[in-house]
Image (cartoon, rainbow, N blue to C red):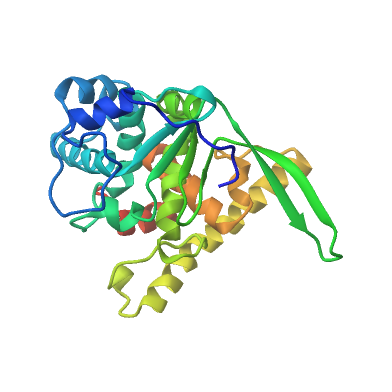
Length: 291
């Protein structure tokens, strides 16, 4: 992670109180022990859930599963506020609800640890974070620049999120945008150590018996969709044609296309189905979502 060092919270912080509320005391997050964590209190859950309008189509059973995953997530992650930002209970649970949405239908008894087990820390920024970038070109010249980020995820490292972007999730769902889901889809992609737009696929995915064949089947759908999207962006930028629905950033690389389209899949399924029918089938197969 390339952002500035987070300011640690001091006890008794709201996050510490939340851990106490969940029966975890003030100790750091513990490795997964297999036991179900204490449930999230009703008042806290409902105060956050009421703001997440893009999730309100979930059934009562789905909401209960999300609540269980969120409790596990909170039990094993630590939140820090950068630049003096104080992380409270509502902020922590807001991230947890959104981060756990992609896990909702996975056939996995411990999905939080399977997919998000390579890190503990989540850093919330009071605005966009500024990251320093460096690249060496073919001639050996070093190029340095600064980049503003709404979020960032790295294999084995923490997740960084801009709190204002997280907080605006209900309003940005119309545009298919959700920074939390985006970064945690990157974490799922990185579960095999590669940022390539293809998360580890389950046995028998799309009827394939071999992992390599499953990966090829995934990419056979994702790659053409990415190439089509890139063409849309080029036509819009060079020839003034209509801008694509999703952020043009999705054209940068296949892994970014996967994350950008994935967040849209979860927060605005009807529009996503119209824009990306082939990806809808692919993502339904992986995330095991019931249409």
